[in-house]
Amino acid sequence: MGDIAAEDFQRAPRWRERDSRDTRENAVNTVALLAPQGVREIVVVTHGWHMPRALREFRAAARARAAAGAGPIAIRAAPISGAGPADRAILDWMPSGVGALRVRVVLHEALAVPFAH
Image (tube, rainbow, N blue to C red; front, side):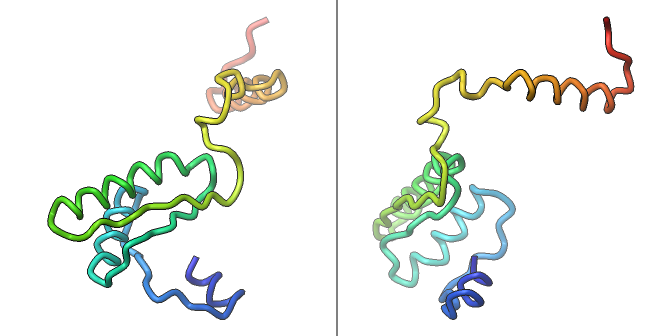
């Protein structure tokens, strides 16, 4: 994100969180980085399908920081595309016929087991 902002928009970010390995760590580290700087609102930018988990983690990190005596931090969503899982019907997650066939072929190759006829 920082590189894209600097290169495409000539706007380098003021802060960068570089140490996280997953969404939870990113949330905890980002809140810890921004709260002492007086930031009271964080906009989470991620893909729509990832947004529910990202918001959950960022809001938990903000609540934990507030419980430790820091001021409240509002967490806002800015999904870049796609609807989150909560917006989809359960059958939307089922593979299509073509998708199921492709999975079968991949598993066949991976397991080196002949197809049963």
